[in-house]
Picture (cartoon, rainbow, N blue to C red):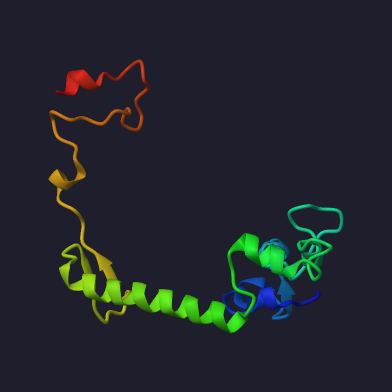
Length: 158
């Protein structure tokens, strides 16, 4: 059975199981799922491509054929600088400004807790029922789960 990088980590324990004699066997369905997920991930980032497909085509075909000759025009249409250092510097500055704004806003967010925890550092505090905007005078416009439009009258809940 061919191996690939999609069979790493937790997948190894699931793909290979010992039979009653102690021989290592491949669980075919798990192997196929693992393989298809690896293919999906590689298609999404264009590490592999499908010949003749549009969405999943060779990334070399994504650029216009005259890209190099008309690079200045293409970058102008994208409103991006030709110099990669200038582009990276502007992105870093934008990220710095946004992260500073986030850092300044964090202490005022009563619905958010950030602390060292085993189950995760970020915890969102549930909103009180009144904060949802739904009251007996303002019922939801859509029927609750399990009800059909003909069975449910929002005016009757007022």
